[in-house]
Length: 273
Image (tube, rainbow, N blue to C red; front, side, top):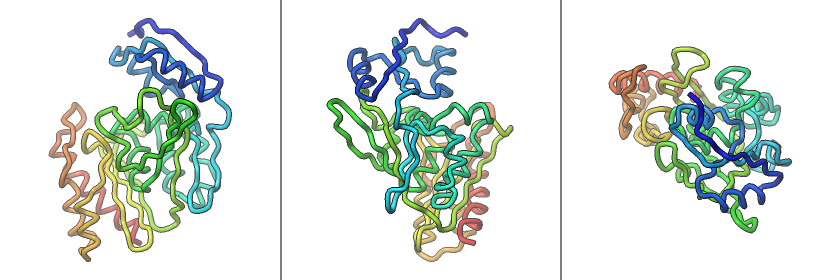
């Protein structure tokens, strides 16, 4: 289908983007566009204006900042996947980025656009949730606020970002311990039917699930069982607790519940090895 008519604004700075959003409550930000444009073609999304932030300088840098790595919101998936800093200090993020879509998607899609879209079937939201990442949003007059990953995803395609805020960077703790990223999909470039991200930091294991609810979810029951001394097999059977998997043409909720237990078992074995 053809998108509904819209205006196009190219922002040269974050402040210009915020001003454009403030002037039109129905405007939306455009970064890579791989999530927004298909929704517009289906007319699921009908913004009155697109504010293109893809050429704003300084928002695609990946840098070391002590205990954290700062990833600019406009960093392309390809750049995240091939960042030597991330490959060394946060390998799960680089690995997961390399599994997104296909090369055409990875060269255009951005990490910030992926998480701001709030799709529970996306790869990056669950990975960042497992990493306990922090999101930095910039608002009017250059004010910034940080949002922890557990509070960022609020509903289906909804996040804690205000309508006039721009996600500018993502801060991820360095994670050189055990980790695993697994997903099951019909074809390599498809959205995950189910995905599991597991990160071990010291004696704490965090597990996050993809496409098992309206938002990416922490597998709290699994984490608590492991903390109480349960083995991988016993903890994994709890992976579907507190989830509400979708029912669609690709899989039933019961199939996803069974599948997430299998993937969680494999992910934990890999992360704890």
